[in-house]
Length: 484
Image: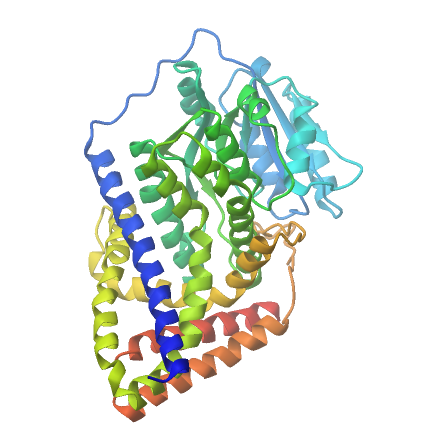
């Protein structure tokens, strides 16, 4: 039996097995989430006689399109003014500084305690800004909103009571809403993926008592929890996930409330989406490198350790998908030339059934996000989402590998366009780099695999190559179009 084809088939099979295991993990979370939704709804804890001191932190860096909106939204929070402190943690270097200063001055004149905090440098990026802000406030609880968020006025009154009924609660996280979901197909696809995380993953993990994560924004921390867990660290790009695991490993309990929604703006252009994806996937890999061993050495139950592993290694799926994709084209020729592998490929087809839980997972989230209907649109939308996700596999795989290797990279924030044209500025996170060219070449590579399958009359990999071809072509096209 030839060695090279055998190695290709074995490696492809291992990748498929990983995907199946990941898919089964998502299936378990879907079952848990459905049980959570079937349970009687939890009642909001009663309001306290005296509200505690709360600090709202707004980490800002060059966001002139949305900075006024987020400051005004937090200034409108319905909370006792003498118990509220808003910090605009402004590391900007452009016109954002003046816009923020003007809004801070306006709300200060209205009697609000609001501070415009400027640092001498951007050391530690967002984590450094949050840490610096804590040194200049006396809040017992710390709410955090990124620049693109627009919290509703009752946000604090609906979240703070959960801390007061249980002193072991370290975080209350809320669900992200979408201000511009219908702006384009790109924003609709992002909303689809985020809804699955917030309506299924976070709900299922919370219901079972597994570790969840503070999502970086749209949530509130108990200040003593931050301190007990060691404060904000700057050695990963996902400071939120890092601190979440340190806190939960020390016994703090996290509360997730999906019925409380914090609306936010989705990236509307490909370079902004890619910068966000890079930060999330690389940061997750860095956090896995930092905490996976600690999780397995802890006294947590086996089920918690297993789900934590899937959680921390979530971004590694992109590396597996990329490897499977690269192997799939030569496998078309292996299938045609080496009939002795026929049984192996038939068994691999059975393993494809392992993708069924992913379909169930996303369908459940789709229906929860759209209770009014639209189920007939799901199959096409799911395939489109899957295809574009595959198209991001090269970009995200690079981020994951850099995270595994411990290579430091700067924190590149995700620029937002805002909903007003008054101060509109097109922030760029990069031009048409070598990776975009490679994405275009990969689209041609998978189209070649698609053609080879048609030529040999082998339909086994045609669906996979169709999704890959369209996905990489779409990501390359939007990268070029939006960069121009």
